[in-house]
Length: 75
Image (tube, rainbow, N blue to C red; front, side, top):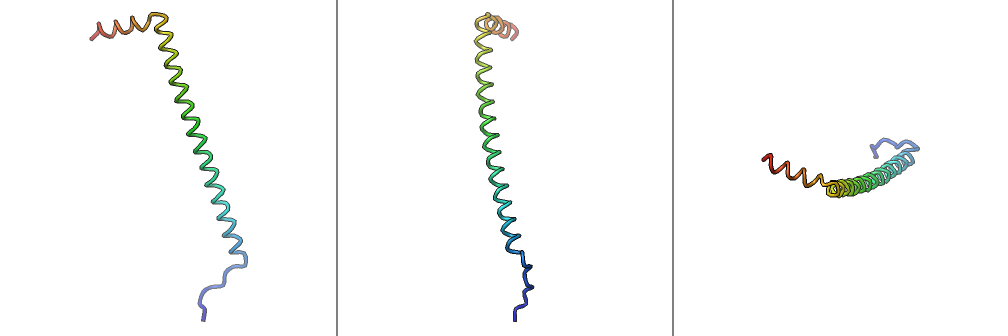
């Protein structure tokens, strides 16, 4: 004698829909994570470029030399 409760008529369909929804959520999350990683990397590259440009401008303006001299004379 089987003592298991009978399954609801739509249990399989509901389970399949839930699994599909979880799969879609996982795919969206992975895509979002990849996008965020790419944008973070881009931002890091832009910051490095900005730092290089600022340093170049400081050298052109002679500020870097004055700044280094001030730093060594204050120590």
